[in-house]
Image (cartoon, rainbow, N blue to C red):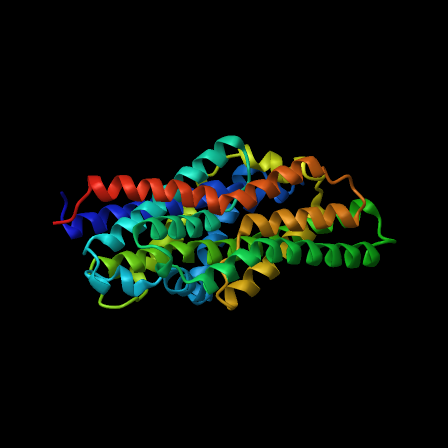
Length: 344
């Protein structure tokens, strides 16, 4: 048996860990193209990506955080004693959601599959909530909107990359290859930074939404609010995770889909950055992983480079099963923790 405050601290700590692992897991997505194109070393690239992750704190709002916090499950049910439910219900739901998402992230990281931490979290919320309360806790319109962008976001990334690549190839068709390669190595620093800002802005906000829900469900805050310390902590954890992130998924993203040079890297990152910043503006929590993977496929398709569709199919299947898999793990985690950690 634990106190409500103790459980709040446990769940917030787990949320920060999830954010760190999100950065660690997605570090490869943020740096793959700039490393494989040999524009930067892995160490230089993760420093750039980590700093870019944090820049979003100063530039953008919190629309995605509000969507995750209020648009996936009914927050009123999470309120202590809300609608006649047990006081610890909301915290147990959020604990189950985070554990389910973390388990799936670790499994896919070990397998080297660039899946979505964001969709793992959404799946975790749905799975944990369904087992705890039933279908009435899920805001199906919000979930459908997010699920639809599993397909829409990478398609937009792919389409944008195809357009950018076609324009670049036409503009530099008569330019000496060495000169254009040198130019795009410099430009890729800008595109990589922009992608990193989009990554940080989109991904850190999902955890902000969860922590705000934890504070609400634990009775610390009387309504869903995003405190400054929550915003700062989430950006910091994601940036630190990105800096500590590994190489395992870089190989899949940067070499196993199609061949990447500085020009292709610039086009892929620019397209991905536009999609991420655009969806952030409208409060749509998309997957940075899906977007950059779609962009890389778009570059390969436009240049008639051999896109390795066997690898691409494996990645797409991992995308498809992320929500149901994380929902299943979250449901099991909720069942276990709701019995082990009863609230006084």
